[in-house]
Image (cartoon, rainbow, N blue to C red):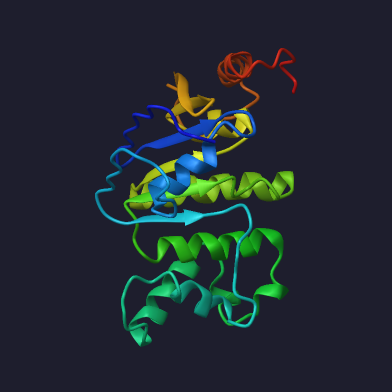
Length: 221
């Protein structure tokens, strides 16, 4: 998908969700912001360090969990200091006791927490999330929402969340952008206090509006 005239600013301390139909350009935009794609014209500027968490944890199976997290450390010499920092971040995501485990022994939720720790160890100013909770079961997904909001409150990085789930977008984001054919077609501000419940009337109203903007008539979709 070719991006078309995208003009996007994400501030520190702000969560922006990006929704759209498959092929609308969501992941292309995220990869451009992450510096993983150079196949575009225009100007991309990130004040500080961007890091990415994908839908698949992408952990290296022959390295322990803590060594996987060390891979995200920006220092050239990944020695004892880097490992100490990695263990600290693992404790923040609730994986202190799994630091020396092998990735294949982790549950899906634990693996995604490890991937999140690997992104956080770099102390990012912008956290890019490419449908990171899409493969998780419902209860684990809710737990990951709570974890993300707690870490966001502690670190106040900017967040761009790519998701297909409008309820997830309403639950987490300050703004939801609807991408259509490579351009930002709509912006919906979610002026609701956190924590939010997607079943509340106010959240349901926002979700229903987003579904209509996406061309989905069934509000239970």
